[in-house]
Length: 173
Image (cartoon, rainbow, N blue to C red; front, top):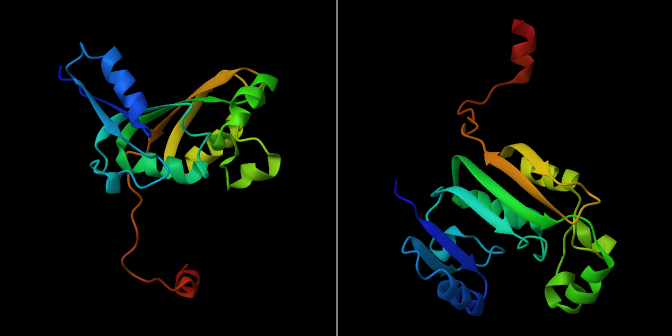
């Protein structure tokens, strides 16, 4: 069985640390990636990953829906997106992470709550809206973190190539 693993991060320093730690694994490749931009435009092939893992890397984005759409670009049909994220704010989160720029970077609906964390049901909605299905989660909203698994639809929606007048359908029925 051939395995390829691409370790990504937005910052070079974390890639270097990962490369030092996992250097004995020849199947691991290290690439810079900003999930807030098109992943395909950053040199990754579309629909080329059958498993995409994201661990506490989506809540600090400005727009979670856009970040998930970018992950959808590289997930193959039938592929799995596994997300591990904080789902409930704990007081120490604001003390530790509240001092970072990324904690306050949100420009989507989370900005109104002044907290970048979302409960599991909101993750489910965003994933469904972005073309993922069979969303399941472990953990709960009052827990520390949740693991949220979803699969990209294996069937692409078919668009009609022919305009149909709805009134014709009614009169022919």
